[in-house]
Length: 309
Ligand code: RIB
Ligand code: CA
Image (cartoon, rainbow, N blue to C red; front, top):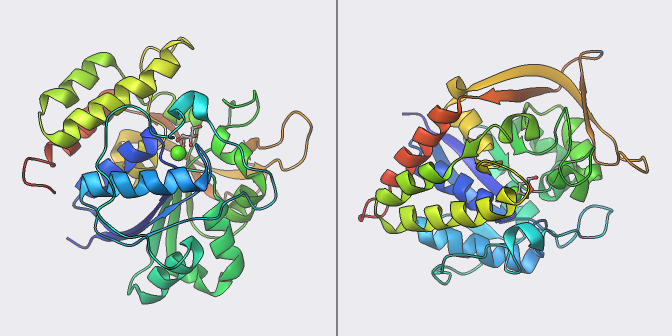
């Protein structure tokens, strides 16, 4: 099978970690690099978490630390959702690898230069690193096959009524990405809040019985706890939808739209405004087969049998 080379850029983060579990388990994807970004927690914490998650999942590619702050805005974190560590809950292994000597943008550029085929970037945090890559190396745009990101929401936000967290942390970066001309798939709250994993699903995952299954079930329970208090019937698994877009697009309903980022505005900064009054710049996921998604998660953890994937 001709696998898709991918770079995982995120701010683990419980749902980032589950997205990376899904990506590593898929025979369709070839993970070439992992880069951390400042978002759910500080860059130091998301980098440490990225290394621990990659150790747990036996992801053997280079891991590089991302930029410590958004392009222009001050850092914004989400300890209320992911805890002080950014990945509270189950104990994780200490990193089995050293951090790459290159920083995120240079590692991404190296992977793009060296890849024979275009590389897909799966961005599940603020888009700071991706935008910095596009600004520093515009000549490499043809080597980016697609950017599949979790972020935004056409109909609503979550951190403010208008803005979703990943976009709100770095609206300037999202603006650079949306205007880049690179093929884009957007998985915003419109679809990710339908990607609900219920407590009954946690137990299906746990019953698979290997180490990764136990950790993923614990991550799901932790992530659900914050959302249960907000009235959610399950854990809205935001970031994994950016991976589902690539490996099981049949589970999704989408529409091509022109998406523009509000970078100003006292009340609407960070909004993703989607419309058809200009040429489309993104495929926007708007619906998901929830049961099929839950089954996909259970099958993915099964791939981590006692003999590590
Ligand atoms: O709004 C949800 C997004 O913010 C997810 O990527 C989650 O990990 C946080 O980064
Ligand atoms: Ca994230």
